[in-house]
Image 1 (cartoon, one colour):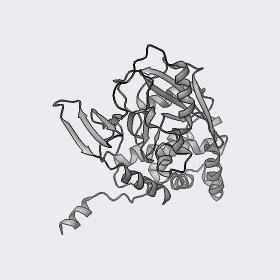
Image 2 (tube, rainbow, N blue to C red):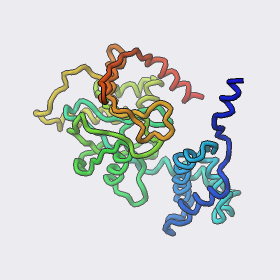
Image 3 (spheres, rainbow, N blue to C red):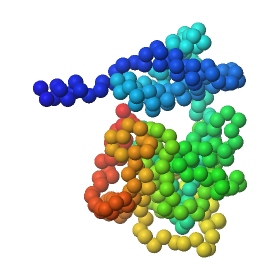
Image 4 (cartoon, one colour):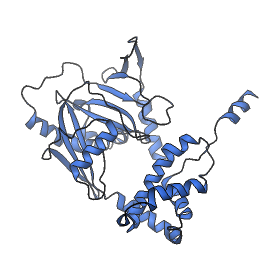
Length: 322
């Protein structure tokens, strides 16, 4: 009976969004925009995507019974609800296919943030996809590359790189049909405070030692490594070449063993992914494969525990192959 009571009291996220909510989202994100934003289905679907983010991040928090929806499901509901979009319902499959094809061609910009030793870079881990990347994101219409980089880094890390960014210092690769440009921001202090400003996008922020990031892992068929760092590996060799050419002779050298230092992490069970982190520093020494957690808040408690990296990577691989 106790089990029945617990299950019945837990919120069941199976209620589709009501018509009133869809009408509000349509009015707020689709209809009340400049006319030029409604001149193509690609632009309209970007607006629908923003409405989807708002629904998942805000509407569902306010009403725990609302069902989580994929973007494709949400798009169908919006087209059925919005009178301006309803005439195109019969073509929604082609419209959505065209949008996904267009989306992978939108240029991406961001930043490679290096610490004062030039030996570590800042990476962010996705909320839904457990892989690391440099902070970055897609350009808005008519947005300049460096402006997009500043905006995306601020959203994903809370750090403003506008005064440190040099337009000529960047690395660029082409992934399929998508151009990715990352500006190099060097000499950032280790104790800089980082925290994402967006919800449910970033789950962790950490300093990674470049010697522990292996560009060859991307080429050798190591699927677990690809899943973990597939958005980082293509930049590692040109980044090390840039560092060799630009690292000042006065830059300090790290005397500590290569390790990952977590500077922000969402609390377990957090539903928002923003403003929910503990003030912690987590160091991972790859030689012993263990974590030492240092609570920098009141009490300064210390805890050590073993960490089975292999099992986590296996779980990641299984999730991506399913």
